[in-house]
Image (cartoon, rainbow, N blue to C red; front, side, top):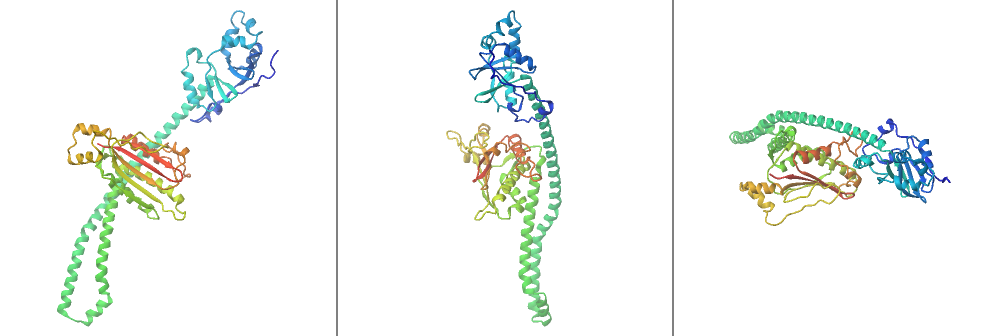
Length: 479
């Protein structure tokens, strides 16, 4: 007698429109799953009836006393039924008789398995099992079947989507690179045009200061020769000569300081403009950081504390303009994070920048503690390497050895709200941003990661604790 508890809930396969809604993180539960079950004690004809009523059914789930026992695919069922005396042997006997012969190794996945992972593992099966349906565990006691053809179609759609997104990302990065190159050329041109008049002003301030002293001495000499004069006293009082003497000096000092600051700003713009450098050049990392801070002074001057703990660093071969962009992106994100909590009472938003030479480091670190593995032993320490490099005593063998162990470490930390763990995992993804529309493009940290890891063969580590703060550690290979 047939078991009336058999489940028959036909599910239509996904249409192309449905498949178009899949994303890179889509899982098996988003596909059409077939939940057709027969008890091992049911007659075999029950399977035949199910397959005839549902032409798209890839197979059936076999249960024993309600517990999952395995599955019989449509292909295996038809294979055994078409054998001589197959219908007499299997249709009029319990399903367990057929299952003994038709049983195959089932590929079982949880329903939250990524489609791309399931497709890859499915294709790794032997040729005999390649087109066998996949068993999907929906819950601890619930199993369904997935047609391999539908899985591969979904995987193909996801692959097409990934290719399209990659093309868009590549195009966006090219546009961004072109913009940065154009910006670099424009800034370099502006800096050059400003440098000439600034140099003229700063160069002539010294002469102007000397001329003012000479004029004052001359006036004093005239006053001694002429003596008291009512007309002269009246004129001195009218022009406030005593105040003029004091203020003249202060004005010259102010002009000198302003011209020096303008010169520094022009230098910073020139350093930052090296976006399209074609070759690595030796640069002072501290100058790059200071130039970036000077450019960002307008954002930092309102209630932000910047602490600089600079170590003794050598000159580093790098693309200085691109590193300036890295520093700007990280500091800008720190400012954005601190502005969220700056209004809180008794809170001093602070950004700390540290630099040092370390002898060894581990790989990229995201969402975990930053590790600094200082290696001891026969190798020279960081200070010895630095001294040898500056004195020109570092032999090629030492340089080659140092290349694998010595790193320039730049750490930029803030005491802001920190980054939640679920966001940390995606922090360097292109186009990923938590900022509102119009304020974030999702390219800043992605480009930062690319500049550090690809352009400079370095490492970019993230350490963030919600409620405590965030630290980015940039590691650049030395020599």
